[in-house]
Image (tube, rainbow, N blue to C red; front, side, top):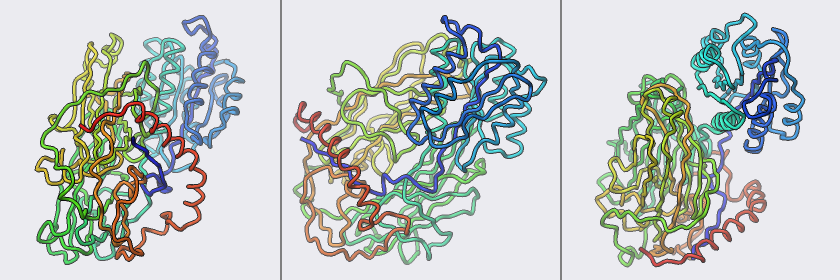
Amino acid sequence: MSVILLVLSPFVVPSAAEPAGELVVLLDVSGSMEESDGSGSTRIAAARKAIGGIVDAAPDGALLGLRSYGGGCTETDLHLRPSPLDRDAFKRKVAALRPRGDTPIAYALKQAAEDFTGDGPKTILLVSDGEETCGGDPVATAAELVKKGVDVQIDVVGFRVRDAARSQLVRIAKEGGGRYADAQNGDQLAGRLRRLAQRALRGQSPVGTPVTGTPDRQSAPLLKPGAYLDEMPPGGDVKRHYAFDLPAGATAYVGLRIGVTTPLGARAVIGSGLSIWPSDGAAACVTRDLMTDLPSGGSAFVVGNAQITEGGGPCEKAGRFTIEVDNRGDQVRDSTAPLELTLIVEPPAVDAGSLPPPATAAETVEPQVQASGAAHIAGSGSYGDGPVLADGRYTDTMIPGEEAYFRVPLAYGQRLTYRIEVPGLSEGDRRALGGARLRLSSSILSPENPRVLGGRENYAWQPTLGDQPQSFTGSSVPVAYRNRESDQDFIKDTTLPGYYNLWVRLFTDRGDPYVEVPVTLTVDVQGEPAGVPTLADPTGLGPPDRQQGLSLVPEPRVVTPRPAASTAAAPPATQAGASSVLPLLLVLSTTALAVVTAGAIWIVRRTRRRPLR
């Protein structure tokens, strides 16, 4: 039986420094919207229904706005400025819209660019059933907004448009750094709008306690275990430093992620160096040279991890160490990128010799979950805040250029196995691709980022999608304390209990086509908690799963507990401390949810007990 209790941790604290995305729906209400939608209703009725789907699917508090255009050539109305979503009010505004007159797209775009209020990512979602009819040049307007440095992306949906209108709308999206999608009926319109809106409101959403790294090692902020969020400016000489303390016998795990997003078709390049330095600064104990280059654009991350164990090398002695992050080879990037840093400091086990030996080889194990249907779920655009999945079947929809993350908790003795299924592409999808190759990549990532899907080239599945359905089954080895003794990375990196991520990415080799690909995941955590080490933890670090906000196995597991005497200073003042009032209130307010979550997962495990594999 596996009982999982979710508790507060820096790993699940959204960063106050990362502004939320804003979306303005810019809706055509010209006279032609009274025409048929191809299914017995009108286009405006289909649009009202489709926008209602956006509102229902948007997360609570989403910053969603509404502007319409149509009538005279300077007629456009702001109905709702982007603000925390009031679903009923939004739907009332949409229901009151009435089609009339001309289609002033260029004028409406200029006005919509002024509707945003915050500092986060901004998206205009333009919906039109025709081309500009007021003599304006909306393509030039979109290009002008970008040239002036207006930080807004323009996505476009053409609703039952003809060739000339489609050509104009495609160019608007291209100049506006967004993407174009066709919709030939009300159902397609609803799907396109919902997907593009979800992408705009979700996107990359790094999480962590805000921290500011320093240009020099001497003044680096001192971190405790947790997840942290900083910013990494462009430039070859830029460095960021962070310090931590390594107790006797402990192992430190450092994970790094820096992300960048570009329009499809625009090259996305990002590089970084990750090093760990001892206090004397003579030479780095660990150095990683990292690079990601996506010619087709979209979301790109450079990901790296490093670990040191006290006594494991000539410079790995108990004391203070510094994490150094720098830019390498990403001159294409000319903007500041979010930097996510994970620190786990694992106390030593006093009973290591009696624990299960390390795994010796990869083994593909089929999921045993039986389910008649799949639950709809939206993966996260970032590693640290994906939805937490229990055993079952789930489905999400992806478009090219996206990454999606789903978290699964694993205790010692448990392995993650999953199956991913994608259907064959339709003839319409193949036409939309225009000869571009569509590929899907998937893997399992460990708590500190590395891939742990053994036995695959680059530790990932990466097929080219075609007209036939495809599926893949992947498995991690069981989590074990002594996996660190292996000389195979995918085993050595399956040492820590905690959140393991299922990662899925959809991308093309060129262009910016719009296709929607349903992705079905079958998730199965196999095995019961076993091989739990007893940790010597005089400094009060806590076990690795607790450092990630989880309690995966029963207590007690820690020996020699004494009042905290850690040499590590507290994290930045913005982090919620264990004794602060806010975390206490949050714990009390979320206790019911945690109990329900634990109970649900207990039921799943109770109905399907299996021996450890």
